[in-house]
Image 1 (spheres, rainbow, N blue to C red):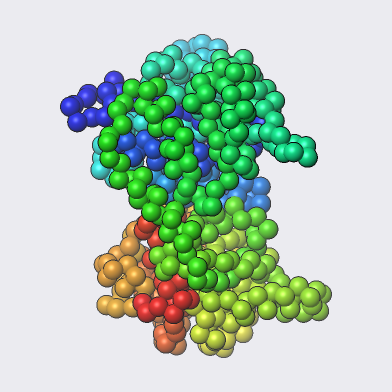
Image 2 (image 1 turned 30 degrees about the vertical axis):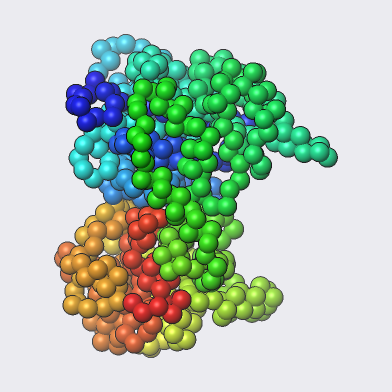
Length: 563
């Protein structure tokens, strides 16, 4: 129990648990984040927890094709991309412990068993695993996350997957028990489900939602709010039927239909009275004025009102799945709003830019180059592996030699360095030792302190300081003249320190390096509208109303604005 004061909006921690049914990909993360916005607008300090039922300890070793991007936190935690939604929507900074996985839970329990903490008891899913889950949630919920050092008032918990999945069973049971641990007056269950439309007249069908709620209730959890995903708003008849068959109040059956942009989702929930349902259920008062909601409405209106277009080429190897670059897309969008332009991304599979494709697949090669030559700016994001590297190098060369604004993130900085070594310094065959161990000119090398035997959690991870080494340059101006920047990293390779002096002498300057002055972090080319690379990943700290400076610079240059 927290110590309350007259100014506290609540007297103890409040929990909102978001579950999903019918199928995955319904938007539980956006729903959870939007509910967090409503709670924050009511004056509560909010944090979030994402539960992922997979056995992996974290998302660090998972393929982007299978899982989407790996989101990196300040403490170096490699976590699910939904934590990025929470950070962007709520403007908070989470830790690795805000992402709970089956692997983490079982590892903790086994370590305790090995130390004898269970006093010889037979260790079982109930109570040991379920207690560990509950203890973890309660501990993390009380950890400050908004930068002011104060304990949160509310924690939004998203359970990944779909109710009924065998992997989720221990977590569902733990949450069933948790409602009695914290008290029913301090917890609210929100269930996200699908309402499909069938038949020639477009009838909204309630049966899938009825079944998933029945299953959830059978597991001991009764939803307080039902969020129904559909293309169009719920019809009154559908809402009444769902309330009757799912044992949920009509005013707690919420339509989550398609909207013009993601920033309208909190307003959509607000307009249907979700704040009032939360207020009544959790026992806090709604203030008369809620400036945060006005900010969100203004932002959503601004996004819909943009007419001018800016085209950015995304040159990567995971272009078939946009979730692989979700934070990069969001950072581009945030910056496009700031320059009052509508963002259009041209996805270019980097392998198609390689000259080898001119013979093997000339049509794909020609199409990729036509797209690249029609854009206002080029972005090469992070990635791993040899495939498509030569195409990324070609994209960097095209941007450099044609004065096209360019931003290279992590690997994007490295390929720009390789290209410069090859074509400006004349280092034939220059490469990264990641792609060519025996290159005659190792422009990018493996960092000496990194493990070569273990993949998970062994990279240079998390927030690191990067001091600026020059008085003035475009990228420093974008950071408002800061002495240093604190950005998040995720890499194993770096620019070869032995080549830095030669590279800089030819005009490619590393204007920001780590605290030792050896590791290159920020690159900028002389006499170019905008040719910038960052070894860190600035996209992870971008916010809707506070875009990432390197991305903002790209969009400013791409729209002809002076930096």
